[in-house]
Length: 202
Image (cartoon, rainbow, N blue to C red; front, side):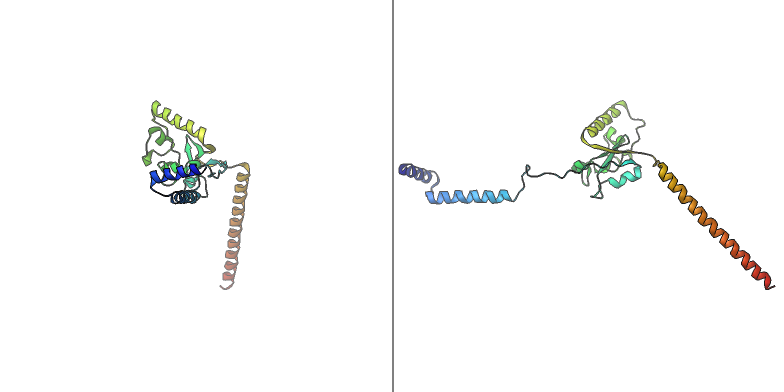
């Protein structure tokens, strides 16, 4: 055993020029430094992103969709293709602020995607005049979105009111009409009273 230790110390001295004590002290310090530095960082395996379940929003107008363009970090990041709305929050590096496709967030970008265009005037859902090749490109985009993102709603030109909402609106209009009619009648009575008083003073 002693001969092995002697041979080791001689080898260390020959290759490093250090005594065995100095060599092992340096090795120990390197190991400690490595452990400390590694502890300052989180490995990719330790990082677990927080996944938020997509919230189905139903019918949205283009104006309402604009609210989900990433300006509010508490809201999902949405984008539409062919009128179908997708939650692209998981790809904020692309569609979020500063991303290469940030201008598409909160919009229907069908035409721009079909033409591979970043022009503001092309960021809309108008498919008129697109060639077969452009429509094929758009279909590829749509297939990728269907596979990767959750569909959370669809674009509508104007919100369709439910029966309950229509009844509530009708009731509200009736209340306004009643209130207005009451004000008019009260004003008429006031005019009549003032007219009698005036007549009495003649």
